[in-house]
Amino acid sequence: MDAKSDLNNWGDPNYVHPWHDFKQEANHFAMASKGSGIYLYDNQGRRHIDGPGGMWCVNLGYGRTEIADAMAEQAKRLPYCSPWYYTNEPAADLAKKIANRTPGDLNNVFFTTCGSTAIDSAIRFVQFYFNFLDQPQKKTIIARDKGYHGSTYLAASVSGKERDKRKLDTISNNITFLSDVNPNLRDKSETIEEWCEKKINELESRILEIGAENIAAFVAEPILASGGVIIPPNGYHKKTKQICEKYNILYISDEVVTGFGRLGHWFASEAVFDVVPDIITCAKGLTSGYIPMGAAIISNKLMKDLQNTNYEEIIFSNGFTYSGHPVSAAAGLKVIEIMEKENILEHVRKVTPHFQDRLKRIEEKFDIVKEARGIGLIGCLEGNIGNAKTEESKLKKDYDFGYLIDKEAEKRGLIIRPIINMCVFSPALNITTEEINILFDILEDSLKAIKKSL
Ligand code: PLP
Image 1 (spheres, protein in one colour):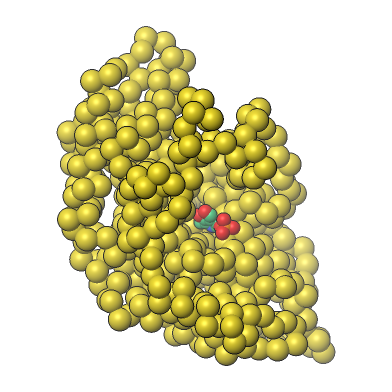
Image 2 (cartoon, protein in one colour):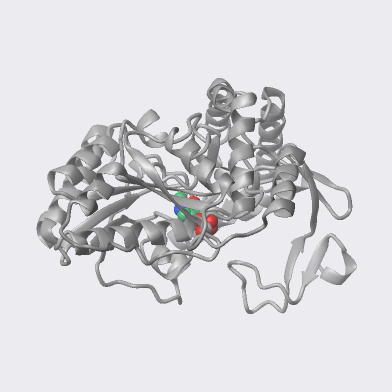
């Protein structure tokens, strides 16, 4: 389509977007102009359900004037103060409120600017920790294939989505990847329990191979979100944590997506997966996407270990101009207040069975869907349209699925996030049952249209 002939398809010559294709002269995106509830409006007034909830972040939906007002009031009173010289009320208060909602003794909140810098800070803290504990050789980070932890050099280096790395350099030294944990990849003869055992054994073998004395931490999203909503088998999290404990390896749970209500709890690590990590990272839902902010939350135990060393000074010389930004913190406080006032966590737990039921029904109804999987208010459809003769063309067709469902859903008023042969959606947490039905009705109509066109 010619961008010039369609205002809605905005030619964007100066704004370089994430994942920009430099072969294109300009990006051609729809121009978002406002939002309300679960809906986004473009500059022509067309309304779409925002399926991915921004980028898994607009958890309370659009048009929350309370959040905007809290930010404006804070900006008028005190828009900034250096975290090196001052504390500020909203950041101090938010840190306390977060600490009250984390599992175990994770009470120490290091504010960052986003999810990537939260992961960077967590890993830098782990290196710092072992350096001060006089175990400087404990450096290796164990990460996982299909994991996604961000776009800064370090966060990208521990991410395991090969496609994202194509021509971008990453650090390979001191980082090791475990294989994809997706239970669907197992042999037909293998049970889920056997698959789980295999993955746990892989972790332990890798530790023995590298030597526990050389390994600092294991970093894992509770579910591998951007990697295609991969949900590890039952018991996997607990067993990986036990192995980490056995070998004195720290466990970093990346809750950038799952934190702040996506699975019906403030944090999913313990409430859903029965694991108390050493460090949790979060961002996105922390401010409902209204303004950037992230955090690495560190356990009391790790802080105590550092305090008990013989060093006189233990300065963590890592930080950002905008660490603990008062305006972001004011947004975070308002998000917590709204979530409690409106019982958002209970609401998510209440509507999740219906959301997941409608999702599962898609798999039963449509043979062009290989799998419909999800958890909490996250859904993913994996396509199966490759009825072509050769493996190569089958693969190509499968890859078309993301593109086709994106196109058909968009026509019908729903934005989803296509990822290769999948599409992902994670709407605002206050979505009603009626709105869930609209979302899934559109998905089903879109799938019918795709099926017809094949
Ligand atoms: N960790 C996870 C699990 C994520 O999904 C993301 C982003 O999608 C990040 C970290 C990076 O967050 P950000 O884009 O805010 O830097």
